Amino acid sequence: MADTDPARLAALEGAGARPAANVRTLVAEADVILSMVPDDNALLSVASELAEEAGGGKVFIDLSTVSPSASAQFAEMMRAKGIDYLRCPVSGSTSTAAAGALTLFLSGSTAVMDRCAPILATLGKETLRCGPAEEARAMKLMVNLAVAMTPALLGEALAFGGKLGLEWNAMVDAFSRSVVASPLLSYKVDMLKARDWRPAADIDLVAKDVDLALSAGAEAGVHMPLTALARQFAAAHQASGEGKLDFFRVVTWPEQLPAAKAPGEEEVQETIRALEARRYAAMKAGDVAALRSLMSERLVYVHSDATQDSRESYLGTLAEGRLRYREISFETKEVLQAGSDTAIALGSMSAEIIRNGTDKSIASMTCAVWTRENERWTLLAYQPTALPKP
Image 1 (spheres, rainbow, N blue to C red):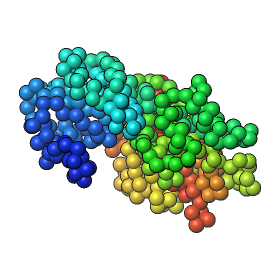
Image 2 (cartoon, rainbow, N blue to C red):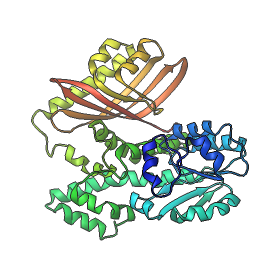
Image 3 (cartoon, rainbow, N blue to C red):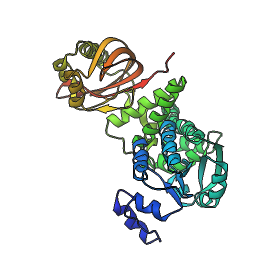
Image 4 (cartoon, rainbow, N blue to C red):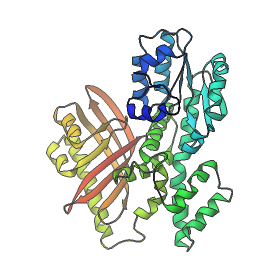
């Protein structure tokens, strides 16, 4: 076994694992290699470590949730070295993983699948063969979309029941013992009842998977408004510092909203709408000083291509001319107040930009999280979701 963190390997040595110094050493000694990494970049970095390894009948099985495009790139790198490659993202919980009862989505060569079936049988009780190429990647993202949207939907239902006088645990039992029941919900019943959000899969991880799906959907021209809305709920929790909590924490999203119009809410809504207008005007004008005054020092600014900036790195791209907004149109469709000092502006924007010397057209649904710090409203987080090209 190999890992970037040796401490993880030390914990497995007692169970019979034999640590390898690095991936290259591991590949040299093994005929079948299994990997699980957090994202596209990590998978492609593994490929760079394998670059000098000859195939010799070796099989590389990746269990990660990554984009179809990155997986296809990895496949080409493996093919060039004569290494057979199976895509095998998995579905389940930490408990099903420990029990060897995961569901495996598998794609690649049928002959290689047959050869590796005994190995894969130790990981999962069910293997779904999806096709010869990136079909398993698409299947996993499709399943994860439904998983990611579940807590947002349940949260609204729980808020409804609570307002009508139903007790929290009774509502959770009703979900788990009715047609709504599912393996996913069964994993989460105890967590929901205890409101214990220690993570099996945290909000940051699930949001990463949703971003992969939204990106793939945009490339394919798929309309995904419900997914984009669920992603914005997750973004609000991330902006509140809850990204490392279990993703079912999102069931509490209605609790972050005021039960009724609070005193001064109309004033807050008008303020946030005006601030959004000032922000977009400053972006078009390239007014770095004005933008700095509107942005929190803790700003997390995500672009529609999934790249991310801090306040200083974003303003740097404007100051240096690497990013220019030629035209911008926007609409603030709704402002949601989450307590007295946080507001979420939901809307849309389209723009003609020049980024690193290249003309681009962008169109997105937008989620801007504003927070009141030292009696002043500043932008804490911005998360766009690219709209499919017409």
